[in-house]
Length: 196
Image (cartoon, rainbow, N blue to C red; front, top):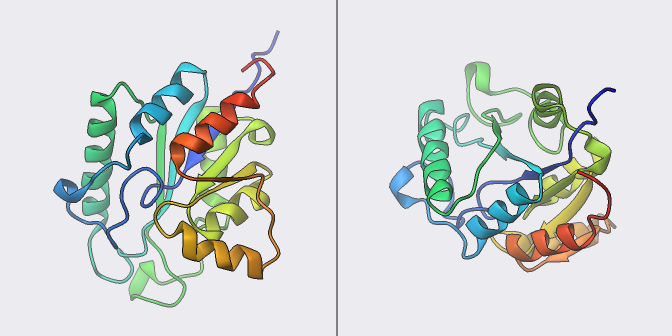
């Protein structure tokens, strides 16, 4: 019998897992949003694959390098790990369609709300997207969920409050409006009735 594909929760990074500081490039400035580590650990314990998908246009804009992105991601994994939380995959997009020069200035398929990062994760981690969630503080995160065929949850941390206005303007109803990642995970787990 073929093993069933697994559910995943795709998380935005800045403003969802860690405090939004604006183009984070110093690992030492990474600060988790209260309750975020415990929320990720709850997803781990429930059998969800946890994947970070993050637009990092600061690379295209020349604010930092891809190595800086990796350094911040390593720090995030380390800090989460101290609290017993695990990230199963990290994907990021360094491109921007309007800013930057050379290879980074392009309209790519990986920049949210395009689904390139999610498609890579589906292939790499054997994910059933129809049973998965996307959680983030931006309109692009909600649209990513819609475009990928997952359920979207909008959090009010980070840019969530101002981005909520954009969601209303676009007439987009999210599956759930969460105070923060902990609230989003509570919603996910309370609506998980089938086998993972």
